[in-house]
Image (tube, rainbow, N blue to C red; front, top):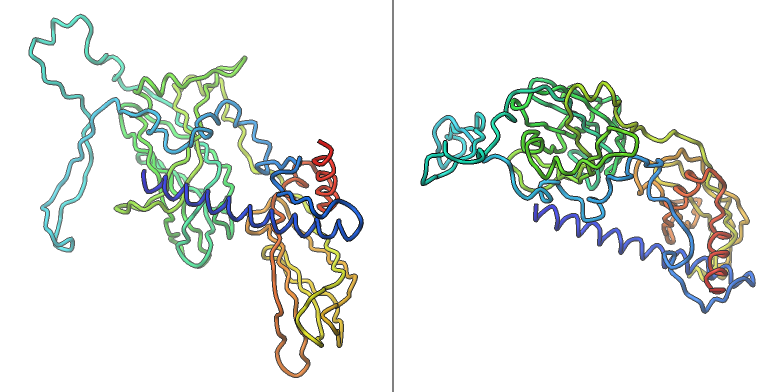
Length: 420
């Protein structure tokens, strides 16, 4: 848990630093253009986060978050950190013989025993109240629903990315959905709901696995898994006390948690999984269907870039052209300014990049720009490159379903900021 908290904190700090770098460079670039055009005051320097511009946090309108996000606001790790204790003591049962050399050891875990052990100095039959109400342990049927929202910070199994999908296993029941795979993403939005029937007490270990789909291999490699003990949840008083009722509904709200994905016998997290878990008597689920959890619809947009000119390019003479691409899209080029002198190439070229939203990961929302020197006889030389993070602007265009003029949006926001 400490390792997961450390990695989560480092990832958050890196994301914040990366956003700050992009915000500074992006706002400086736009402020410079505005000053040249006679717009805003170039001496005023704002970061994008300081301007009165609202950005959505996710692609889907997340109504399911209402009443479930309080634990996320407090850090949102495994809910076991909130519950603190367990209703039972758990003792693993082993078979075989231990040997210091792992290749010679036959010792393996074959199960576990759950119990409550007490040492008393008087006869328990004279207690006013029983130590544990044994009537609660009579076997009953329950419905178990797992809502998997997204994964984050995944460690690739092979290559630089993952084609992740979810597989759940409870007792002898299992269900995997490779058709719901998210291609080439380390932060995939999954939006999957799984439902099982379970008898408690009984087989209570629920495994939620993330697997890496592979077209050429029938067995897909495991990225990592998280395990939830249903008995430790259902028989815990604090878990039962989490039932906050929706108005005019019997559906009980459980908080969303962020669980570490690990491999067996490995303490290092392989990523995190955002989910919530419901355990309800079987008779209740007939009255209440699962919470709607679906991926946002795919819509087509277009990123348009006007490439006017260059300045201060450290070449006396060059044959310059520029390349643009968004994420993994194909590259778009301007024409070539032949025999350009003093580093001042001119194109006035419009680039149109089609894009399907939502994006699988924030990395795909970065606009890549490169300046090249064309050579007829040998290879071309790259002069320089940069990136602009358009992810939040694409998110804004998708959620508000409109055209977003980035330059105008920032200009208007700066004027409103100066008028305050």
